[in-house]
Length: 287
Image 1: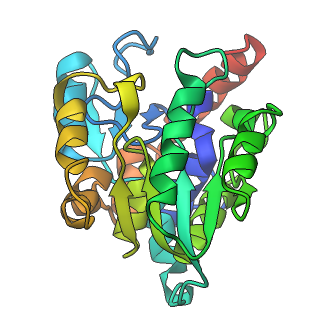
Image 2: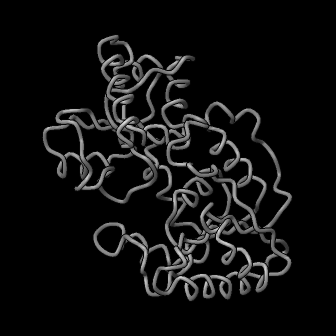
């Protein structure tokens, strides 16, 4: 229904999990990315009473409070369903050491260079035998950020496995597949903000660590998200992250194919038709 349902192929992956191989549009909104509290921002324009599909119990509780009048269902992260599909083929030993996910920084943002430079110093202290730096597309292409890492970490591989622009409306699920494979090919994964990738890495059994984010200019700066950051930044062994990864991803809320079809409304021709019409109208308006 809304273009955000397509992020990283989430709607398609959930369709596969529901044994629907020609995906149908969803009358409702699917949470995109890890959120410490509500799965959807307070200022997001939502169709009244449209269902909201979130990852975890924490997301469900906070979303129901922030968006009263909407039915809220916790269904687990699409990543978890994709992992179940791929799991038989994922028994592999890593060939590389350290994978780094820098917290996204626009060049125009205050402290952007300082944040990256501090992360580079932190990475040096980890004494990695090999380093891969995975940048967001706009940083990979900005002509500056990649050069900064290449200059200060000359042995590092600078890459991106994110979808190329316009990535926000792509329904290509291979980005998540590439991300899973890249994580599994590394022994350790670090970031200077609590990204979804860190939770994925911990759930996949890799050593994942949250590094201190200088000046904390990236949200969350308050509430549950800030508390999680402060707790996890004190850990050096990744154990606290392993303890929360499943709950934050909603592992206890995974549904069977029949349950998923019913919850997402895919058994209803009326609901999927209305969702398809709304999506077409939203796309034309540039929503």
